[in-house]
Image (cartoon, rainbow, N blue to C red; front, side, top):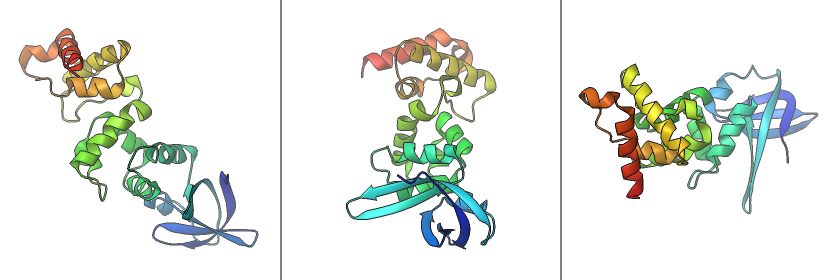
Length: 200
């Protein structure tokens, strides 16, 4: 397994680079956001790498740091997301921004990725919330007032504490009607979530 490459940046393309390592040129696919941060050709670079091997293909992917590589590995672990789609996702979002979009269940943000529609965005969010998001980062809609957002977060944390996954807790309370005084009742939201979970 090739885990790291250090050499001279020989060529930069729109989605890949060639790094010269002692006379051998390695072609690596790199997310656009990362590619923009690379130095000019002729400069020395060091990239974390992931070697993707299948029966009919062998591709090398490059990343600026371990966080980027870790996100890539998590993304390709999702059914239906191959390495090129994972790179497309990472070309739109820096790692932290993507984590925030997943944490806040921001479907509209995820659909900005070419080839990802509403259905695909929801599936990505559900599959990744328990993998990328800590309990403290448990997501709520971005346009909610801070008090309501905190209340939903507390309710979700309570459901996770009862043994449900982050994705299950998110689905269970996502349609809770946040109107009037009811929005301030964490217990009501928890009961609402448990009722939905019991029907699954």
